[in-house]
Amino acid sequence: MSTKKVRKKILYYLGLTVLSSLINFLMKTVKIRYKNYSTIEKFKSEKQNFVSAFWHGTMLTGWYIHKDTNIAALVSKSKDGDILEKLLGRWGYKVVRGSSSNGGKEALLLLLELAENGYSIAITPDGPKGPPYKMKAGAVITAKTKKIPLILAGISCCKKKVLKSWDNFEVPYPFSIINVVFSEPIWIDSKLNYEETNKLITDCEIKLNKLRKEASKLCSE
Image 1: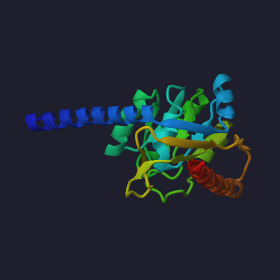
Image 2 (image 1 turned 135 degrees about the vertical axis):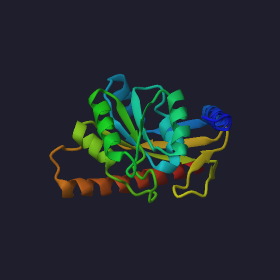
Image 3 (image 1 turned 135 degrees about the horizontal axis):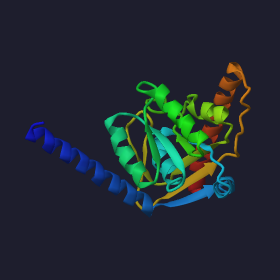
Image 4 (image 1 turned 90 degrees about the vertical axis):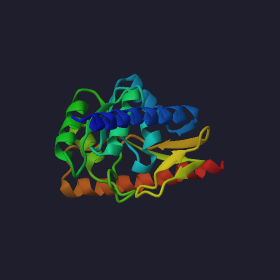
């Protein structure tokens, strides 16, 4: 490998470290207000693993609230995914790399294996490329297959920068308030057929969007 390529690679990984450190510091400054958090506390105390689903645009908070627990996350194989892998490593995650377009089947199988071994799973069901706020099957299928509860998390940053990206990515301002509203646990019958499972996915999508709007309304209180 040439000296130029080595230098470029070193700078790239230094950049990953600096950026993940900045994000980590930012999230430590925010105040997170929870609604319906008791179920999450109960599951964690009982060591009951679960699937947590939140929209891609709110993933910084969605991942942060579960840090340092026995949890795994699916991250794309893109360069952005490299940053997230570094960040999630700081937060104690088991990171699985893949997406629906690149290594998705293998990644899903690994997530299922981790769930079988007691890991909770954090999923952005509209990722990695959208459309935004439209739920794909991964969260429901994981919960259904492994017979563990699915919990939806509606998230809204009260003061934030919304990036011009497909997912309306939210970057909270330092020391801002973030509202997180959890659903009741959803236990999915493993015997549901294809049509019933698809209906449940749609119902979860509607519910998650309602939770997101509820979290947003709490910012005015």
